Length: 183
Image (cartoon, rainbow, N blue to C red):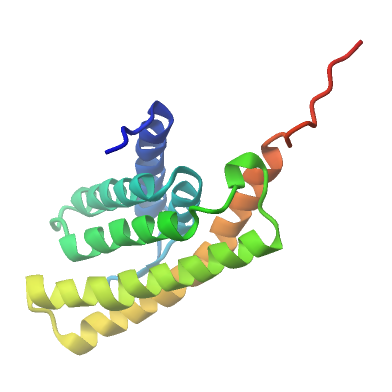
């Protein structure tokens, strides 16, 4: 197995910390109980796209764990795992993107957003509700309503925040051959 680079480990730590802060303190309650309008998945999708599936999975897992832990109601593992699944899938979908090389054009934006839509649907409409039912014996109609609401909200916020982060980051990277030696 390939070792994690220092850069990836730092990305996991910083990503988890920012995910926690955004999820804990920048959350707007939605009309559906226990679901919020949050922007942390835009950040998580960016971390996964740039640093890969392991960084995305661990930043989502650790960040979501600390959000739940900080509220004091206990850790809702079904949703913590769903956040990790989202980060993992985003890293897989975005493997071929070259955001860290300064390339994120129209096809990259499309790939990124198709990947995030599929990843959110898997995480919130499949993983979280099924685990809620299996782990906590939650009512089926309740957990699927929460999952669909969460997926819809996260798709929109990730499309905006995640795409903008990727564009800004790719534009900040100097293009190959753009630096010239002065005489």
